[in-house]
Amino acid sequence: MICTLVHLQINDFNGGVIHYRLATSQFDVILNGDVYVSTGDLLQIDDSEETTEVSKTGLKITMSGLDAAMRADIDSGSFVRAPIDIYIADVPDNSDVVQSYQFHHRGYCDTPLTEIDYKSGTLTVQFNTTNVFTDIEKIPSLLRSSLASHSSRHSGDKFFEFVADIDVTEIWRT
Amino acid sequence: MAIYFPSGLIISNVKISHYTPNFKNTAINLKTNTYDRGVHQIQGSFDVHITGDEDQRKYESFLMQVRGGLLPFYIQLKGRFASSTVISSNVPITASYTKGSTAFNVGTFVGSIAEGDTFYVINDTKVYMATQAALPNSTLTFYPPLLKSIPIGQFCHFKNVPIYVYMDSDTQSITYDQSGLVHTTTINFKEAI
Image 1 (tube, one colour):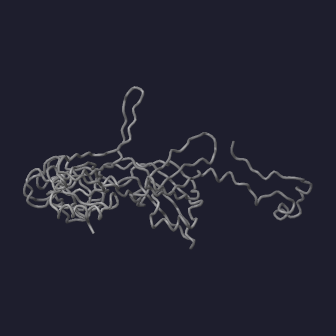
Image 2: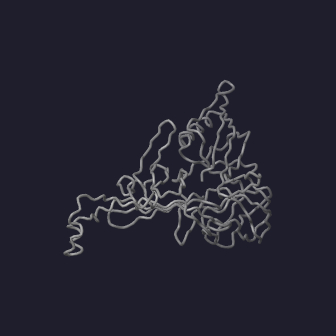
């Protein structure tokens, strides 16, 4: 049996991590000792885009809108930058333990958007993700090469004394 | 509290579908690869004829309890969902089994299980079907896989298996036939997983 597993790590305000492990199978499955719950909340996982470029493209996930357990986390903003892993798992017949799996997507969640449609009678929460390569798009603002910051690390070295302007972007991608 | 379809109503024209979505790819050379998703749902419809003032009122009260597709309810269709050979005792399962299991070892019971017999297990609303005939003290193979783990000492119940279903629509209509003496309606349902 093939199913999709979603692992969300939400930070709670006490500094701990809440793990949501959800599965698209009809019964709970076990991956590496963790139980992935067969929830009725995973409605849609949109296609991911594959490219040879290093980019932060993610995908969109639609979930059922009013699950009480997740509602507080959705509303508190702790979804933003929450790490997410999506696996495609293979469970053999007559078993509930994942035999093999591959990563479908790894990245971070963005702000969830609640959608209410009275015409179709649906209540959903949608959020986009960015993949892990979003990390290398950060501007290294703490590493400004100015005389002051350089001298604080290397006392007496005035290498940057005559620099007029610095381009602070580190480019790691195409 | 569980809701049951009112008893004593005439059910006819039953249609049943077994919905088992899979992943399927067909190559240019027409060779096919299929991947099991392990999900199953009974879908269907049936007509209802209701005579008598009391039964007509009970039926509309039932509609207020389920409120369209909001709440699931049990329906006993009998016929196909009664055991095909007489099984006069519940069938004991001789061990504990985890979710995902597709076979049980069963103990002693009177009668025999026919291929295609449906059954349920306590604390689980899913309807399961025997995919091979089984005698007492043998292996019962079934589909879909068990949705919930069961401890030791449980039974398979084969008699008059109820299906736990949702109405497909939030609008339930009744037709007043025979000058209003007979109420008729068609119910479309999907199994509640």
